[in-house]
Amino acid sequence: MNSMRGRDDERLDALFRAYRDACPTPEPSANFMPNLWQRIESRQSFTFSFQRMANAFVTAAVALSIALGVYMSIPRSNPNSYSQSYLEALADANTLDTPEYVSPVRLELSAPGR
Amino acid sequence: MLVDFELIKRAQKGESAAFNEIVLAYRKRILGTITRLIARPEDVEDVAQEVFLRLYFSLDQLRTAEVFEPWLHRLTVNAAYDYLRKQRRRQEFRMSDLSEQQVMLADAAAGGKVEHDEQYRKKIRESVQSLLGAVSEADRILLMLKEVEGLSLKELEKIYKVNENALKVRLFRARQRVLKAYGSAAAKEGAGQGR
Image (cartoon, rainbow over the protein chains, first blue to last red):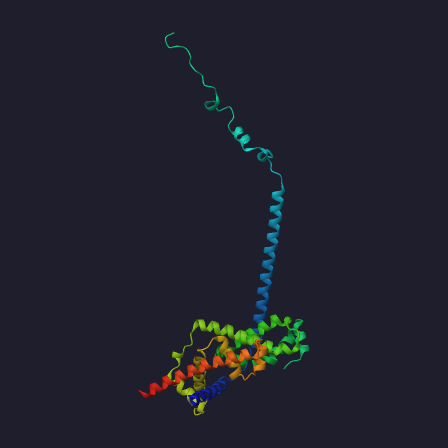
């Protein structure tokens, strides 16, 4: 068993050596450096535009926050709207101009035979 | 080291000519390593460019000259690993892909009986790639660096930043898996001939 294992090991080593020979180092093409610089520049421009976009987004977010803060700090045009209690607001809404609910009931007290 | 640290410092400052010199000095070595790691000649240059691209954008992180080469190796390993993972998704390398003819050629290669023409080289590459399908991409690269590139455990330790014993264990396991795959392929071939 061990001898079998050893033989397989040797054969695998030989296969790896053959593999190394079968993968010779290629000569770089003439376009290697120009293509590399092209990739570097495109990555740089992408990073740059991403940074610009991120900056614009942050600026817009800050401006929006400031605008919202200013809007919230301005006093309301109807200051009473929040000073009234619920009952006061209800009373205002149901004034005496609704007689069907609030006017006194008139009773006919005369006897029918008179 | 193929370049001096002064050149690296100049490149770190953004000097394009210095970076060009570094690329020219290491280009061939990196191309060779990638060729053996990925075994696809048509994609080697693309992966090598990715290595130098990563080098360009991370060069400012380098502090000492001693770590430059292990670090460049690490970038190479990472780029090859990313490539292999993408490839794995596209096309699975399985042991069943190892044809009888390939096993025969692999055996013949071990005995050195066949002439090294391009067809033969291609078959050897395919055989080894099929065998390496038995291990993960990470183990495959580690095994290649040790067995084919001939890196020492000390060098691997610097690249992987893992202690020697852990590397030995991982290498042993990966090799055992490949051996098992090799044994099964050979047995399958033997059974095929016996019929």
